[in-house]
Amino acid sequence: MRVTSVGHAGLFVETRYGSVLSDPWFNAAYFESWFPFPSNREIDLERIGSPTYLYVSHLHHDHFDPRFLRAHVSKETTVLLPDYPLPLMERALRDLGFTRFVHTRNLEPVELDGLTVTITAAVAPTDGPLGDSGLILDDGESRIFDQNDSRPLDLDALEALGPYDAHFLQFSGAIWYPMVYRFPEKRKEMLGRQKRDNQMKRALRYVEQIGADFVFPSAGPPCFLDDDLFHFNDFDRDPANIFPDQTVFLEYLAEHGREGGRGLIPRSTAMLTDGTCTLAHPFPDDEIAAIFADKRVYLEAYKAREQPAIEAAKASWPRGQVDIAASLREWFEPLLEQADMTCVGVNGRLLLDCGEQATVIDFQQRRVYPWCGEEWEYRVGVDPALVESCIVNRYEDWINQLFLSCRFEAERKGPFNEYVYNFFKTLTEERVQYAEGYYAEQFQEQQMWECGDFLVQRRCPHLKADLTRFGVVEDGILTCTLHGWQFELATGRCLTSDDRRLHCEPLSRAGATSIAASSGETAAGTEARRDLAAPAASSG
Image 1 (cartoon, rainbow, N blue to C red):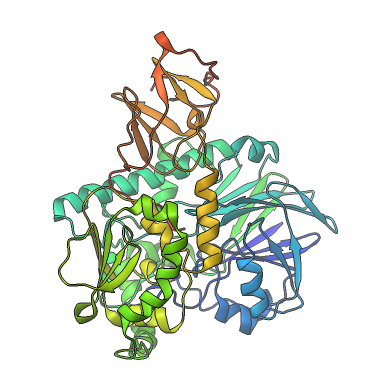
Image 2: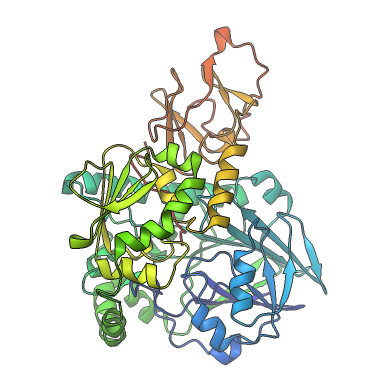
């Protein structure tokens, strides 16, 4: 099996039974904010343009690039579809001209003329744009897991589908937190350090669970080339920057005793044969090292090449064409009427601060109206041109356009609230009904496990992660390392959000049957605050 990097999370995999193009991304994303790093402009588009199969893990625009797919990928290609409850991805790809699809089921292998394909799908409202996934490919000689941005929960099932020759996964940030928040600089630096540390630890935990022979940092970081965002790049390995590059994670793996870490840049290839991995790169090693060692110089040159396109895109944004409050009232109020659980979950006002067109989204009264100085619980300060663009183009998912652009300022009076985050993904009746149905199906988890001196529900109240695998206890606080949510064991109180609670009780009076975590399930589960953090987009 031969794997060629096409940049960011993109892979071109050649097997004995055909080829797979996965998550190709070439065009600037999110209002010209994100660019692939390193640049992938030199990829031979004809070579990758007629794959046997196309796989798009999710619809975030650093994975789903409609301009590239429309112009450069053969419409004779068969698309591998994750098991998502809403057909949003299939619709998007049909709109681009694709007509051949293989519908997979979560974690169920599909044999395609000799190539075995398995897709693991996550479908919580918080996962990607209402869905994220990872891909397993097995041609009988080699088996790889392309996890990209996804955060699979059923690790037992994944392990059962192994062993794996190679594992490709996200390790870097794919979010706007904490950079855009109006925090004091010292607090922002502290939160950035926590975020960087948490995302590296999470990736390491997946590496240890999957146990592949070779590990490839993938799906990040992007780079920021616009003048307004250029400072977001991690030029000097700043421990408070959430966008560490591949070399940082490879060193992190080595520091933690993990062998097999390998780095790719666009056009690099990895040949997997009989348990070995042979790399070939498009440049000599010293030139590749210079990209990362002299990143500011590299990005300044990259920026100069892309600046005309960035300025042209910014000049095209609509200004003064839309009455923001009136348009959002017509659009959002019918959705708010249907969003019972979302409105209860938010239970406050969000100020969309667009200067003279500042608008309130009131989740208590389920109304949208011009701001007249009312108190708010959440504030988004944003250029009105970006909001006008979202309205003119009727974007159904503002996370996948406006918020991932990082072109805004955020404030909140209290902890992060995922209902606010998810509302902006669900801006159609179909989407909001899906989210409401998902919330309604949540129930008190009955499986329990022994966690120190307490009997605790096994599944995290946030996104049902298995706490026997992802739970770590320190000073009486249980942290779910999958998303960083924290709970006080003595009370069950959630320290991350007011809308969650962990069922736990002292073992001395526990009457339920427990499922004790064995030492093989987690090193810290029985021995052993993502503070105000937003969930990753990945983000990607």
